[in-house]
Length: 280
Image (cartoon, rainbow, N blue to C red):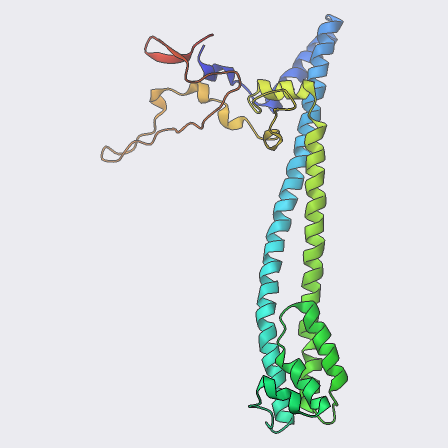
């Protein structure tokens, strides 16, 4: 038998098939054991499909959250650059208030100034980009600045407060998103665990979604993959090749490495010019 002949349906299609079989058996009062087995298989498929829907919904929400998180982190970095400009503006206003007396002062000479000026200069010279450190510094500056003596500097530090607060909002959003992502990822893990039962794993193995139904060997990252891309491969023939104009190359279907469980794709037998998986 051609190995592709095994791939005949998806799990949702199997669900529809079972619904018809169960309805028929119930109507005709067939063997109760047979009906029980079909219902058990149907129950496992429904449980799996419901879990898969929840899993994929969470996966989509995490993807959206990560995209938003990335944008917020970019904005955070942009604010860090903007903070340097805010700091430069603040120092410029201080020079205006002091008639540029300290414009060319060296950092090592600040210690020779009067105490109040010395403290202000040290704070102005220590450029900060990180939000929490910037807020602490600016609060200390507001305490040191006499708005009557340094009106431009004081008014500037007050007006810039609105821009600084925007960073606080972004940091809060980043914190909330990162926590939400962790929570949603733990939910996804729990959903994967919920379908790690013998009945469900054997169905997934049957439909080539996982390579083993031994829970210790199952790759959980593949539990909710779709086998739809494998359906109809069995109908592939050389005539399926897509051709265009005479002078263009033919496009050919490219099959993925199916890695079918229990099938050694390298052990082939040739029958009438076609390769088939050898029946061990």
